Amino acid sequence: MIAIYARVSTEEQLKGYSIEGQIEDCLAFAGTRNAKLYVDDGYTGEILNRPSLSKLLADVEAGFIRQIICYDPDRLSRKLLNQLLITEKLTKFQVQLNFVKSEYKNDAEGQLYFQVRGAFSEFDKAKIKHNTMTGKYRKAKQGYVVKDSGLYGYDYCTEQKTYVINKREANIVQMIFDYFTNPAYSFQGVKGIALHLTKTGIQTARGAKVWHRQVVRQILMNEAYTGVYYQNRYDTEGNYVKKQAGEKYASGRLRPRKEWIQITIPAIISKDQFNDAQERLKVIRRRYAGYSYHDYLLSGLVRCARCGGKMTGRKTNSHGKKYYVYHCRKNNTALSSTGCGRMISEKKLNENVWLEIEEWISKVKEVQETGEWMPKSYVLLEIEEIQKQIKNCESGRKRLLELLTILEDDDIDLQEIKEKIHAIHVEERDLSIQLKEKEQQLVKERNPNRSVLKKAIDSYFRTKNKILTTKEKQEILRVLIKEVQVVDADRLRILTF
Image (tube, rainbow, N blue to C red; front, side, top):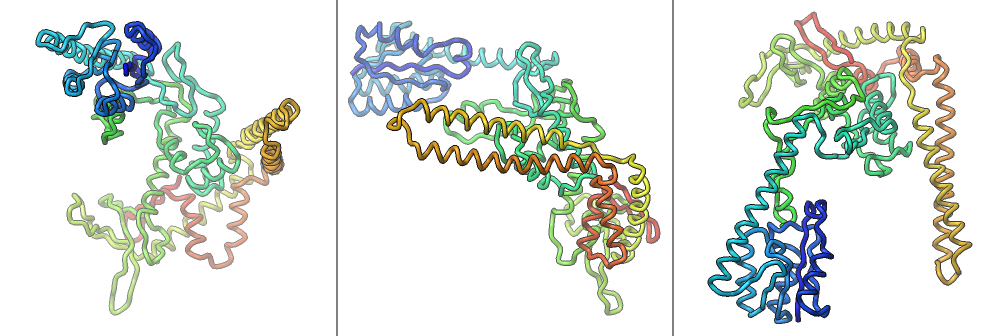
């Protein structure tokens, strides 16, 4: 049997190389169309582990192949060592190898020519790779975005080689940052925002309907939304080849910071709001880094103003009685600083902090009653997203009904179509309920006296005369406080968001 092998890599496809052209030339060379095709489409010539090449060599060992025709030696492989390994196996099983664009003879002279061609092919591949990387680096230095990474909130402009703002997605990015940084919104952190986006039906960058909290977190941590975009951050050299070869590779290896290339793209959020989000994310990581049996009211929030170390809660004994304190001391002796040893009563610090927060809330209430502190509303944007989904459902239902009238009963499963129409009806009904809720929410938000912040403050004052639990106090404090700095036993500084 005659076998024809053809290959083209992903980057060669972009440059116009054709699998079909290779096959036609090989068939013409064979003088017959009765040949078995082995095609590796989108695979680099630097590896041996290619599906069709592996199948071809297995058929050679099984004795099914007597002749192999390939367009050019670099289609077989771009590495000299791999070329020699392949030809050695073909010689072992007495299989004839022919190239359309190059004459191959299995003798001393032919082997020398073949090896020289292989060496030049390997050199040419390395030169192409070097030139490509150098070209991308130069374009990045000139301020161009050399690769579209699918940054949510932007569209890639191929003419200008940069990102331009996608108005709809940018509004959602701004919404996420506002929901996270503005205490007037009632969402419970990153997870609460992800659940809200999912419930509202807003699609992710990949068109998925479910938002995971890690996706929201990545958006909040991405400095590109301030207009600062870095290229050449990751060292991915060799990963493409290793991936196709089925080998392990280290993804996301950061280059040294000095090698990063900074360019400017349109900003969606301010640098101040981004920095605020990073501070809040740090606080969240501190709060949930560990678990303590005793529920410390200010867990993860207390810092020593003298040495700058974190103060952690612990239990201590004094005159036979047990006390809880915040202590500036680390147990890990490997740390550069183990703390200065300052200690303060947990009960005393809790009382002082809570007293100041109550005074602060009272002042906020006065400001809010004037209507001067109103958070930006995203309800209109959410209504637009729901209306778009309802319209898509209507279009889908209409297409299915038209399909029922066009096709014969024998051509289609009527029950399956009816089930799909029913599923669309259910989705439309749920979306209509969401839309009604959002429209009601919009009416309430347009009344300054019904703002989210005012309701939260009113709720506090309704319960101020009762004894609040530690959990209830924590829910209030964790919205308002970034850090509590202990100056001495009687002085403290409270940093609010």
